[in-house]
Length: 214
Length: 214
Image (cartoon, rainbow over all chains, first blue to last red; front, side):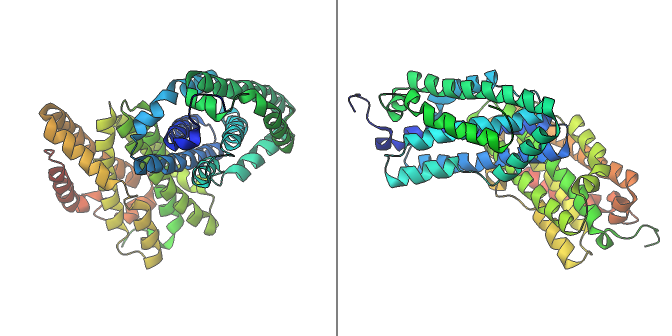
């Protein structure tokens, strides 16, 4: 690697800070979506997804504290780009909120998992755990599939929404890499684009799984 | 008991429905307070309290499902009274939100624990678990004590706010008992008033623990 920036694995607290910020913000968004959900079922699924994100935040925060870092300081450089993503990708209702978790979270998880493939096993384990399904993926997939199968108009709207989310998720990653050299180094010299093909392939498979066109 | 209403312990799903509603609503309120919190520290404490409430909701919901009840239907009779409480007791900032958890949750927990003292051991265990500290009480007490010790004006404002919360919590219990015969039966013939003295004693001890005047 010709970059002067040391690889992320040498400074895991920067990566943990980024992911802690991703997870705490996900908690806030999902909890707010749960608060707005019109149906009891959607409210409970979104609240469960929120608590899952918070548990992952706690894991990362505890690793940061163990490493002697201040969690808040470690998260701060990434807050603007992550908040901007959520500002631009505001779900109009609970089904869009569920689609957002399903689509955008999976893309970001794929990106970060690819990015730490060459990191040390300890860092890799923490990152994988912080991106893992918190036990709500199955019910999420079921809800989306059932909705798409029963309502062609809803399926079409969610398909468009998902396409927008792909763009927003990838542009969040681009913005983070541009504004933070250590994130840029994480994605390597070719940047986010190098991973693009593989990540879009996986996204398309996920869309087919819930009967949404991508 | 001269009431024609069977005691709550004979129909634990009604009690579980009430407490599930209390807990899911607490999740929503705390999560919304976390979203509004200005400081990282308060945000994380409130988010932790929210996830604790959701875990307790899940416990009650699972007991309801095991008992063959529809959790949503079991919660529904109590939603209006509980939402009305939160409407009337809207914290202005994170310190008021933390005080609300500390004061109102403890009073309601005391009430329901007293109410199930004569229930069967299984019901009592579920109720106690659903009302237990989710591991955040210590940090909550510390935050309030530190704030009250360092800022006399804030301590005075929180003291007034706590007094209002006592009234609102007790009137929530009264409203629930009046509108729902099974809750009235839970509190016995003398009603909420019979427990009032003991509950206010414990409230005053908690206020002293955080250096707030009651």
